Length: 513
Image (cartoon, rainbow, N blue to C red; front, side, top):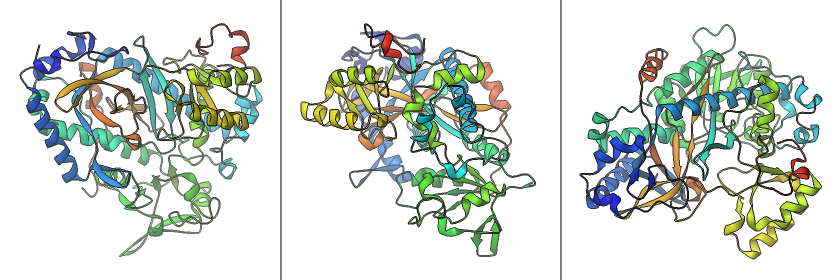
């Protein structure tokens, strides 16, 4: 085996590439053979080339006020066709359940009347917006794009870590990672059957067109960005360019007669679909934050009148609430009479006094997450926290138990990452991106593998110093057939509550059984 792998020692967690020292998993045989002729110095040189490519293309992110190239590791993550099929089935099922739940939340609310989810969970959720109650999108889709975060546990099983159906980001890195890797390692792709990722803009554009109001035969689609200072602005601009859509800010739009128009040098232009990349609170100062200067007054009334579609749907944040996350397996059973294909991480709801008392006594052994947190912010990993942090956490949880969930610590799987001129294990997760056009939920092959770069770290978010890997789904005839059916693309311009009451003897037992 090549020198670059000789010193690699898989961590105690499940390693994606090796089952043991010098024992590669079958899916990685071809990749390891291709990498064997390279020495560490050559890998380091190619890694520096990748960073320069990203800097030149503007693929950067803000870390402590400094713009840096987004870290892309040279060693791809490989997913075989069998496992990818499992991921596709599991994510599709979950997106469909969240779609059904959101339709219920903003209409009949039968899921609450039937006692599957308590009413108090809905009315105490910061993501629930009464302003859009009764608003039905033209084709019924609220989750046009979803990012479902997956991890692999200590036993090699895939689990859902988090749902993102508000404004999921990161797909631009999938596209740019693949472009950079093909330029840096052209020989790898000549020898490996890797499923392409370049269908995503076409799939997204088709889903947005399908969501247009009735009568919009050639729908005008815009990408609404908060502006150039937003951390994800590169992604907003990239997707607009690849779809041939206008990239706009709130000041470029205006509403009159419950319709939305775009200001152009040739006069106003009717807008049919807004792919928004900003939070609900800033969209419409009439119904949300009156101090917002990045939204457009009147958007929600135009959407309610059926004259414009906002994607993703306003109010989707209630499904991102991490307390709702604990109910998703029950939602799947309730709406579809199916068992979840992908289980949750074992989680504990703190609204039950007995559960709360137990969790507060075990903070040093659990992971605590704020229910409305994003980007890894606010998460406290008990085994890694000091006494001062745990004491402060105890007070916050006791004062606001609705604001937190607890989970057992999961040893995220690891993968070889180039650190200096050595390969070392680092923890990773996976964010598959799903696009829903109302008829089918399509998954971008592979998605974004995020890497926790600091040694031993478990938080993979780029805002916390994380990086990424190119994610390879090994192609099959089925994948080729699916690609042949892709839409024509010609861009115009270029656990049940109280579960611990009976499980005190085994507090880490899954609530999803």
